Amino acid sequence: MSYRRKRRSRIRPYTFTGGRTRSRHPLMVQTLVSTADPAAQPPRNLMPESERILSLCRETRSVAEISAELKIPLGVTQVLLSDLADQGLVYIHPTITGHSPSENQVLERALRGLERLFQ
Amino acid sequence: MGSNDSSNDTFSKMSTKIVIAGGFGAGKTTLVRSVSEIEPVTTEALMTDASAAHDDITETPSKTTTTVAMDFGRLTLDQQLIMYMFGTPGQARFWFMWDDLVRGAVGAVIVADPRRLADCFDAVDYFEQHSRIPYVVGLNKFDGNLDYTPEQVREALEISPEVPILPFDARNRLESGNVLKDLLTHALAYEKSDAEPVG
Image (cartoon, rainbow over all chains, first blue to last red; front, top):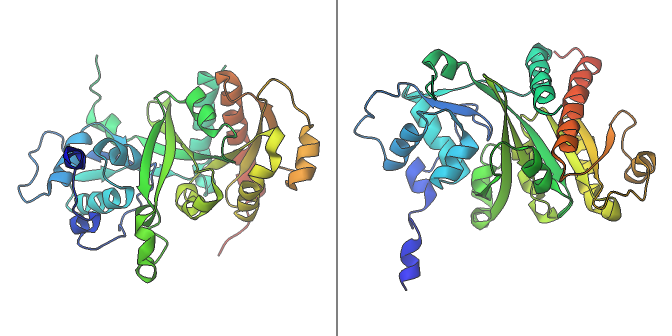
């Protein structure tokens, strides 16, 4: 039965999030997150998962990367990140969707970047 | 020198996303693998987590057990701009995940296997109906040959005339990169021609 020990946790994911399934911040899978102050000690009352997120995001990462690297389901990752953002502990970067004409400049930058990479 | 960037640089970073869609085995992951600067990451998403922003799951708690694998890759386009490529689950029973993956995407590539065109009917339907997301169709030349011309494919799949249909080899980095460039070019034109006054 030792294989069962390999399962990291049998706690339902919602236990971490107080039953909430929505995040209040615009956190899409591609949204980048950085620890607000990488040098600061994390507050003591943080859950281990949140602490691991803070530690990981000292280098900027996307929500999907955080979820994959820490093996925390996407939705749970989003809610934990939302809480960390509320506490001012993480910075949530702008996400460019291209839906507004004002973002065309960034799309053009993206295209120039692709042209540099694939020529 | 080295890997430390100043915090100013860190906070000015932003990201964007494109979606790679298409039938099972059409070459989505191959495309992501060809262009990505990282080994494509496969991660399992609980359906309830992935769709949390949209679905009220309280009515159908049985859905919570569904897990779906999704692949993604990454491209650093300049010092401040990162683009992620998300492959959508190919099987039709995972369509429910699409809204979440597609939300906020600047565009989509539908990878089509010309030998099994019917496999991408669902994807074409999806993007024809979500007109906010510009898309292109990449015709994956598995053995270097195409049995149909792009125009025949357009007719067969009922694809709008303005949507580019691009023959390419998903195993080829440059050809795959060109599809991404064409998508961005299409997205830029799309935004301008489709700029209707809202509100």
